[in-house]
Structures are given as structure tokens and as C-alpha cells.
Length: 160
Image (cartoon, rainbow, N blue to C red; front, side):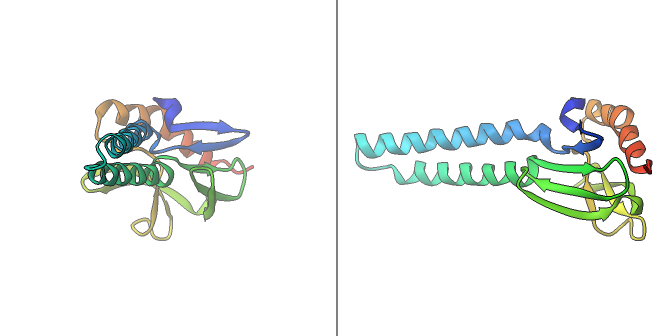
């Protein structure tokens, strides 16, 4: 579980806050592909009734693929020394968003689901970036608070 939340890349700490939701997205993509196969079978075998499974399969697959790329595969890299914290979506789109010495860790919630986030010290209630999965399960919450959060705080507070 802890390996899904963070890993080290050189001296940089890489956080993957929503990696635990990626298997669900893959299952939905596979279900969408099954609907596509069903639509091909119905088109070849009967020549009719293929439009609805194709539409369902397309919606499921496209939405789950977008969720997997832009939400489940988010990576936040906290550098070892001075620098900016970087966010990447699926390893493709990278963005530097905040200087490491101007950040603090805040607890936030979305639709009643709590999570930890990195925010700017000058406006901690403004824009924040999620660094933990949704902490609705006690086991996940305990693992994050005891094992992952101290490592993140230590990495943010180091000044090489």
C-alpha cells in the first residue's frame, strides 16, 4: 500500500496520490472493450442491434481512459534540494507549480472525502494540490499519516 503512494527517483520523492484507483479504471476500460466486441459480434451475426453496445463501450472506455491518465496517474515530484514541485499527468504533461520553500501541507476535503494537499503558505485555503488518496478507509488513513506523511514533511523541509 505504501509503495502505491510514493517512491524515490534519484534523490527526489515522487508521490502518486490516486494510484490505488488505477485498477478500477482498467477494469472499466476492459468492460468497455467487451461491449465493443459485443457490438462487432452483433453487427456481423445479426446486422442489427449493434449501436447501443458500441455507444456504451465507447463511453465507458473513453471516460475511464481519461480518468486513468488525468487523475489516477498523477505524479507529484518533490525535489531533493531547492526547486519547484512538479506535477505530471500520466508521465506526459509536466508542470512546475510551486516553489518548495513556499509550501505547507494542509488537510482538505472534496465531497466530504478528506485528503492531504500541498498549498501555498500565503494562502493555505486557496489552490491546493492533492498528495494523498482519499482517506475514507481507516487503514489507508493510518498508513498515510504514520508512514508517508513524515517522509513528505522531511522532504519538503530539507534544504540542500
